Amino acid sequence: MPKFTEEDKLLRRIERRFAKGVVEYELIEEGDRILIGLSGGKDSLALLELLARRSRIHKPHFSVVATHVVMKNIPYQSDVEYLRDFCANAGVELILHEAEFNASTDNRKSPCFLCSWNRRKALFTVAKEQGCNKIALGHHMDDILETLLMNITFQGAFGTMPPKLVMKKFDMTIIRPLCLVHESDLLQLAALHAYRKQVKNCPHEHESHRTSMKGILQQLEAMNPEARYSLWGSMTNVQEELLPTPQNPENQKSKINNQKSEIQNQQSI
Image (cartoon, rainbow, N blue to C red; front, side):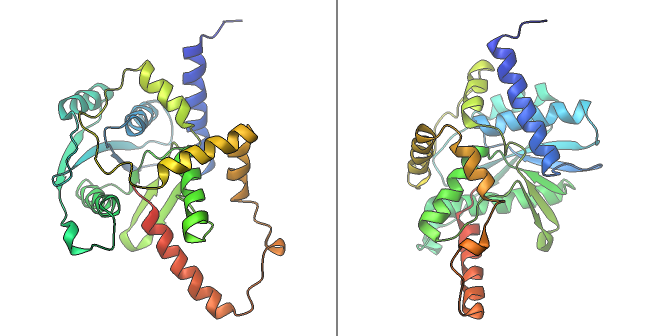
């Protein structure tokens, strides 16, 4: 039998989890045209690499195009030429889209929320212009579990970023093909393939609770190495008979709607 190197094992593990997520959550269908949100970070670079390869060798048949949104009023900087070359080598067209926002118009929201909100608007704009019916984002399993913990802790709601979100109002579907891929594997892949980092990171990137939740997820895995799988499984194993029963259904319905709104506000691109 052939002996697999550690590099082979890493690539096979990522491909297997990537493929499982795509199939299990039915993320790609025949004739899809998918816009990849290419931020320039390791996750979106890996997403582009994996989707581009799958579009060439697998059924169903689908096509991909990428866009990099430049937020002009946030002082971060990406290596645009590197992104152009990366996309060209993968056989994917790259579209640059500039956007900006005025933070003073809503001082109730953090710069991170306003930036992510306007980035999402930009992605929808480009997707419509390019005739895309889906937008692929680079959130991995860790991102999804951290969002779950954040919503439980700060919103009092059990929800997260789903692998597939059909937005009928906008005639668009958001997919997260890396939903079952671990961040630790993506870090190794970035080193293996020498992904180039952003020239200058966003100055607000450590202002959210996500960094703290990364640490909490690591603590949970230190207590139980299978903790991430237990957390993931809990999202489809809700034992309602063992939960508090609301006495006023109408008030509960209103509360749930408010929580859904808050959860959507927590989801970033």
